[in-house]
Amino acid sequence: MTHYLVTEENPAGKKLEDVLAMIRRDILDRCGLIADDGRVEAKAVLANNMRILNLLTDAIEIAEESTNILDKAFGPSQASKGGPPRIGT
Image (cartoon, rainbow, N blue to C red; front, side, top):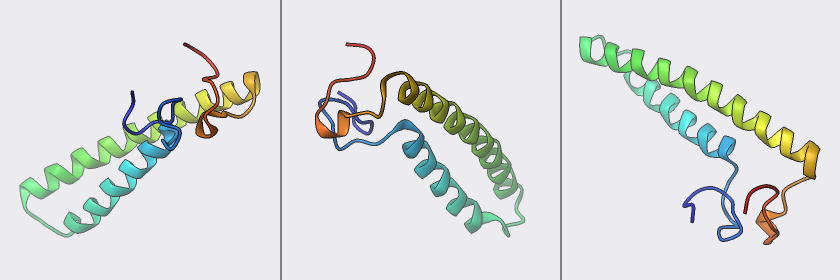
């Protein structure tokens, strides 16, 4: 069973792209807190966070593409209403 993503067992879950977007927002908030910190460590963490943000953006776009593929092929997901998965078992 998944903890965060919508499934038959977890109809209140979220889409992958939504979970990734929430994480991206949290990282952006943290970046704002350290943006003016001139210490080497803060600059390194900020640089790492910027790389992670780019990777998350790519992942969000891929997840959205998967959702679009499933929507086109099988219609909107009914998992949040207790419906069966569109693919898989």
